[in-house]
Image 1 (cartoon, one colour):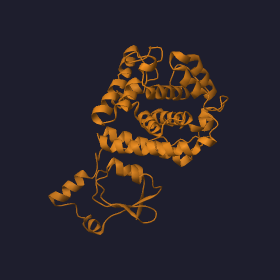
Image 2 (cartoon, rainbow, N blue to C red):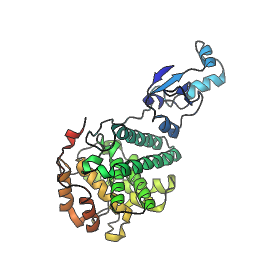
Image 3 (tube, helix red, strand yellow):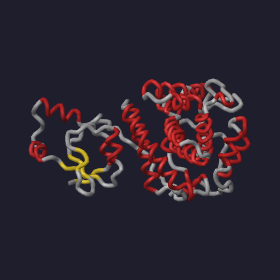
Image 4 (cartoon, rainbow, N blue to C red):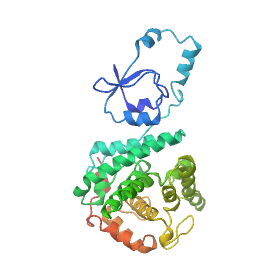
Amino acid sequence: MEKIDVEELVKFKMLPFDLYNDSGVKLVNAGEILTSGKLLQISQYENLYKEMPKQQEERRPAKAQTVEEDKYDHDASFEKEKPKEIIFDKTVNRKSKFKAQSQVDMKSYFATTMFAMQEDAKQDAVQMIGEIKDKILDDVHAILPEVKYCSQLKLLGNYYDCHSLNTAILSTALGYRLNLDEDFIEKLAKAALLHDIGMTKLPKEILEKSVLSQQDNKILQTHTKIGYKILKYEMGMPEDICLVALEHHENNDGSGYPFKLSGEQISEMARIIGMCSFFDDLTSNRTTNRVKNTKDALRIMLEVGSRKFTPQLLYQFVNMYNYNDLESYEEMAQ
C-alpha cells in the first residue's frame, strides 16, 4: 500500500483505488464517488493509504480500451489539467485551550464545507455544517472551565479560514455563559458558521483588497441579502438562521445595513452573532482600529458601546473573561 495525503484526494470524483486507514480498515472502495461528506469523514484520519485492486493493476499497463473504461478514466478527476484542492491554514494558537489537532480539524472541516458549496453540493454542505456545529459545541463546553482569556478561544491563520469558526466559538461560549437554552445555543453555533455565506458569491478581487472604494463597499454589503437567499432557498435553513445572515451588520442605533434596523427589531441571534463577528474582526485587524491584543479590542468594544450593541449583551460579553488580556496574537502563533 502507498501513503496518500487527504489533500490529494480532493481532485478525485471517483476513486480509482481502495483507501485504507492505519489499521488496515478499508474506508472507501475503488469506484466509489467521493462526496464532500465522505471526504470530511476520512479527513479525520491522520494517515491514509491507497491500493489498486488486482483486476485494475492487471490491466493498467494496457491503456483502457473499452468505452466503459474510457468513461471511468474521464470521470476520475474534476479537472486533470487544473485539479481543485481544499487548502486551509494550519497555523496553531499555542495559547489556546483547544488541542492543536482540534484547531486544525475545525479549519479543515470548514474548508471542506466551503469546497462543497463551491461545487454546488449544498446538501453535503448542510450535513457538514451540522458536524462542525456538534464539534464546536462539544469542544467549547469541555474547555470552558479552563478558559481565562478570550484569546484562548481564538483560531489563528487566514481570516477566511477562521472568521466564521471564531464567530461560532465566541457565540457558543457566550450562549453557555448566559445559560441560554440548549436548542438556542445549537442554532446559534450553526447560524454563526453560516452568517457570512453570502461572501462566497462576491468577486475574489474585492475580498482580497485591503482598502475598499465606495463602490466596493456597496458590493460587499450585498453579502447579507445574498446569504439570506442561499440559506433559505438553496440550503433550506430555518428562518431564524437565515435572518442572522441578513441582519448581522445591523446596529443597535439603526446605523447598520441592509435595512437600518435598531434595538429589538434585530433578532436576538443576529445581535449576539453580529457582536462576536465584530470582535473577531477587531482581533484579526480587519477594521480601521488596529489592536495588539484582546484588551485593546475590548476597549474599542466599550468605546463603540450602545451605538452598535445592546448594553446588556455588551456587558455580558466584555465580562465573560478576564479583561487584562495582553498576549499579542503574533506571539500566540507557532
